Image (cartoon, rainbow, N blue to C red):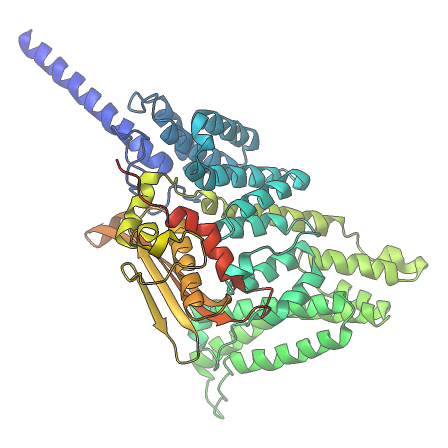
Length: 544
């Protein structure tokens, strides 16, 4: 009997241990952070590179279950309200990705309620507060309520104008509003122009596509790509496909806005560039088989021809409509399987209006294409969900920056506290930062921060760029190029990755100081940047 009792006791202990281990893992699987421990806010170090992975419905259900378990765990103390809000936000994101919009909104409501008095804290407002607002905007946009989504997107963008992810999410929502302006995204990242152009094309905002076209450098290859690179979809092949699709978007937009001549020029240019980029099949020797390389190149030419013909014929059809040749346009439309997107819907609408009344019924209805395009745009919003999950900011989370900057206010001579006027005098700002003058007159500014918040690193780098600009005697600067990096500690077992823990971020900006009034669409006013970010990052550290 004693032996059986011992066995039973051991089994009970094993069960309890397993439950405890799973309980801890729930926190990690939910929001990507360690279990709360005794920290007052319940936030501990991240244990994964992202707190939310978009890998399908099963993962959504697993995340939701883990969050539900973590929220019910006794490890989460009643006083750890920030962690509770953080967990509820993670569950809301998973539910939104699973298209459970009512459940996501209920979790967002619960997260705001859990925060309580924290909602009045400026650190909370600019991180978790902005994050919850963006998730609400995405939820509204997913259900088609654009009137509710766009004001929320603008609110979040205005609250965090220098955070790249915030501006990216806001831009993805505002593209549903034909009257919306591009916002600050292009000022922060010139490379965002290409993605913005594609979104505007998907939305059917063709005048905006034409306006963005001069800011986009299409990634055409410098020399023909090897057949195998195209067959294996190597990075250069993906760039080529991007150049082709975006090029045809621009050509169609010109035709749709009345510039038929410009669309024709684009078509000619596209054919020349594609011919130069695709591998030419080698000439076969008489009496010999063409060989595998020639066969592969021939197959690629055929596949690419089929793929691009749809876009080229659509542009030709829209040019024909613009030039009052609706019958030719109708023949092209009937003979070609057009992409099911906003441009095809616009083509059908324009063609129906241009056709003689007795032949207008020949044009297929545009409604199915409009519906498909709208669904594609709403589904694209799912990719923005991880960008909304800003790391919570607290005074404790900003302490990491003390090693990267001096006590600015204490160092200013004669107590000069006016932001944007006296920040550089006699102060060495090298720790954590690096500035390099380039031969073309630009300066590369970079900052690496040991912090879980990428947005903090981005803003610190931008602040340093504003300082460099003012030190150069210029009032404004343009970001010519930017790169953002994540530093991770990866553990492997038998050559296989078993964990990836973020250990910091780095932002690198190449800037060009400019005079007032230069490139107003992209220039950032250095004093405004300092006045906006300085009150946070230049604040004296309060005694413990």
